[in-house]
Amino acid sequence: MEIAGIARAKGVKRIVKTLKKRLETDPAFKWNVNDLVSGDDEWQSRLAAVTRDIGGIAGHKAVFTQSAGQMLACLRQREEISRKADTLYVYAVMRMHEDNADTKYQGMADQAENMVVKLMSAISFIEPSILSLDEDVLYGYLREEPDLAVYTHYIEDLLRQKDHVLSPEMEELLANAREIGAAPDNIFTMLTDADMKYGMVHDENGEEIELTHGRYVGLLESHSREVRREAFETLYAAYAAHKNTLAASYSASVKKDVFFGKARKYAGAMEASLSRDNIPRNVYTHLIQAVNENLPSMHRYIRLRKKALNLPELHMYDIYTPIVPDVDTACPYDEAKDTVLKALSVMGADYTEVIKRAYTDGWIDVYENGGKHSGAYSWGAYGCHPYILLNYNNKLDDMFTVAHEIGHAMHSYYTWNAQPYLYSDYSIFLAEVASTVNEALLTSYLRETVTDKTMLKYLLNHFLEQFRTTVFRQTMFAEFEMATHQMAEEGKPLTVDSLSGLYRGLNMKYYGEDMVSDPQIDLEWSRIPHFYNAFYVFQYATGFSAAAAFSKRILERGEPAVKAYKEFLKSGSSDYPINVLRKAGVDMEKPAPVREAMRMFSELVSEMETLI
Image (cartoon, rainbow, N blue to C red; front, side, top):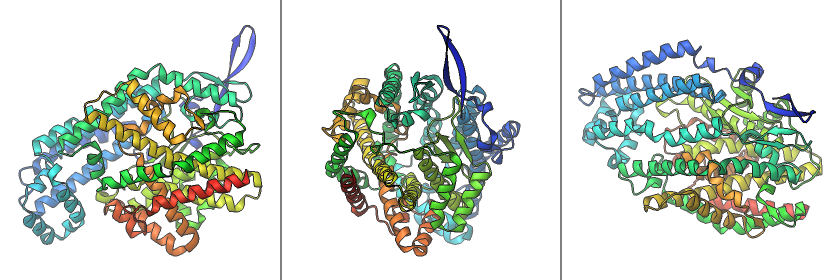
């Protein structure tokens, strides 16, 4: 994963670890994007063909609503073109993510974005045309043409949002504005992944290494406080050097959300975002309320961390280091794969056989390289298998990331094999459930199979950290997003000072008096990529709560619970996400799942207090 280069200073050799280039990475640890498209030349050829197809869909506009058969023909053509466009878009962006500094794939990703804008513009007449029909005529078409029956939920969902669908001309205008709306996210990505350099720091061996996204959290887990502090201060110095640009970028993103929300006649940007999946606003606000009510448990955990680390002051750079000393957290990739497979065997052979294919058949891009997209994700296109991007750093936390992303991939795999393209994408509200179920099952497996008491304490700490980062921290992010969008809607400026002041106040509230809120943390908002997908992060917390309920049932009830859970995985967007979860036995409109998760956290803190 790393190569050693020799630099000379004052006649003394020193080892400098720098990232491998993409071409230097072992192909065994790269994903095989050619399962999507055979190569770049083929991609260009197929792009030209799809572009021609997009131009032809306008022929349906005049006759689309005249008969059930005409409607079916247009909807099917839209899906056929959209499937092809999805594949081309995913291929181009994944190739760019291999090295964001590669201008060739930047260009292809830009071409793909232009293609999508053209497609969205070309098909923008369809939904307004459907909604222009009298409901009796529309339902008559559904009865008349059996092959239209699959569109029933789709059409009923359109009718639900009828007041927010605009005229064909306005829909076309908003579709054409999509590329402009994507600009803040694109600017943030290019700045933080391609252009920004985070400097050099020292690891625990005193060796100088390049600081990257992938290495940052690993350095914060170091037992050396000096290593943690240097990484923290160096990273935030890089963001501080670009703070005004980052504030302008985030402000533009928030204003974009507000603009599109108003254009579609919603009360605000939050309502516009939640409406897509028919999520009641109170699911969002009740989450924040429930977590705020349980902040004393979070503050107890912070006090425990401070005591366990024997520190006179607990700083933000002390928050990731394990509070259990002398534990070897090294975890090579092969070991992680094997352990995750064993932990997930409770899901049945059909589940684990797919995971084995993911390991061996080029579904996963494993190690970090220069310019590679930061973090981890699962993605792909209908008709192919899902893909996983990792930046594996040989730590125990990275094994949990493998389990997490496999959860996403299995959700896609089951959905794509059970649903038509129309319902092949699960909603964001459901997206983090499957990933977190896998993490919970892995945690349970490790706690049952590990015999070393010190490691057991470490795993308990790790589970507490999952709660802190997935429930408390993401809810804090959600509260920040709600406030920034409200500020924009009220015409208040979003500047470095206003954003940092707001973030500092929330950080102090969530972490309590036993945590020193270092001035650098005021800028944490500037490095969170999920903020460019507004009102996304709250679903990590709701998803964690739902996942806790699912994993508990799977472990306690066995096959019946596994069967119900797999039906959840197969559902895609064939129903509203609240209903999908309710059918599987978890009702997120009620406070019980979040309260149960909070109760579990409090019990874990008490258990850890006793052990420490």
